Amino acid sequence: MSETNTAQTTTTDDLTPFADAAKALVDRCMAEPANDKDIAIVERQLGRYPRGMVAVGARCVCGRPLAVITRPVLPGGIPFPTTCYLTSPEAVKAASHVEADGGMREYNELLAADESVRAAYHDAHLRYLAFRHELALRLGDSEEHIADTSAGGMPVRVKCLHALLAQTLVMGPRANPIGDLTLKRIADEFSPTVCRCTTED
Ligand SMILES: [Zn+2]
Image (cartoon, rainbow, N blue to C red):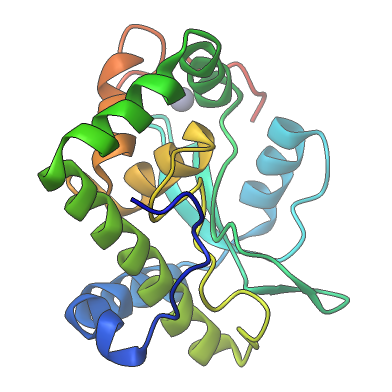
């Protein structure tokens, strides 16, 4: 298996199987764009203003944002590949614990050993690109610099569990196998269905 994730160029045909779901998700984001209250909470979560935030992609049961959708090109023309961005400090901390605990090495070994996980992970990559492609079309953003770049090390490596967890929270179960495993593993510390939020409203 390849050690790099830049070996191949993704074509529109590769994204076709994921286009309908991508359109539906962009529709959902556009139907409820980021409002001032959401932006203010995310700013407190991150400790900085969330530039290019389009919408909240996933919420805690309490309503606070867990992950946000960020546009492909930030104000100022900066390409931004991490379209699904984890903002919940509790989720960030929990994913960091898994990383510190050797989780990334385990998941890389799993990818190397299990063909079905490897295939599902590659699909997760295409799902991510299809979503961003649709978002870029709607917003009129260029994908020039990020067309083949998804997030978290996809399609062949695991490099950032935060990015993969964000995809799982935004797109739901079975969108990303490593995101699913991460979410399951941190259930005692973080779950979208159990509010442990500490950020002020
Ligand atoms: Zn909450």
